[in-house]
Image (cartoon, rainbow, N blue to C red; front, side, top):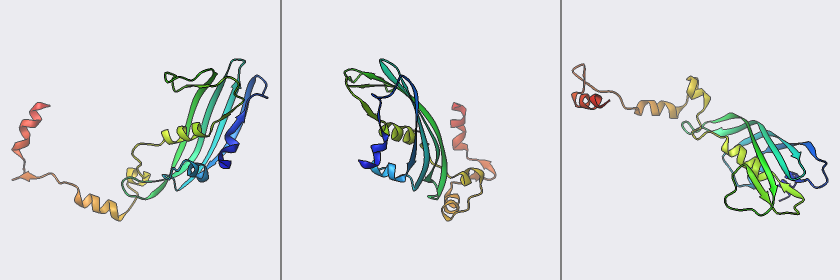
Length: 173
């Protein structure tokens, strides 16, 4: 837990107002959460804590890049990350009905650990389908891509005409 100790912020001694904290987020950070989708991570996290008399406002920003594996070609590529998230921290009794943007912590708490929030923000900002930019613009040459292109179904034509079996389906559109 020593890796995430720097993400614990004691807010009791802080004056009301805005306070900025910066974090270097790398591969060891994600190893703590047993997240292995990244080969390498180089991210900078910024947290602006706005302390109010009755609650806290947290504004998270993350920028940098991570090295991901392409879902199509299995090649590694750098994917830029630029995301932000706002969170309100209230004091009281947590319930199951609290929205995601509000975190309720027990009365008398004097610190908050923001590591898990940074982790969630980054992981949720990743695309569902990870495609190498070289595939999109056609510059990536790879044995897997060549094999996929060879196995791609080809449109068959009978005597230079389309297959009549599909014409009735076109009428449905």
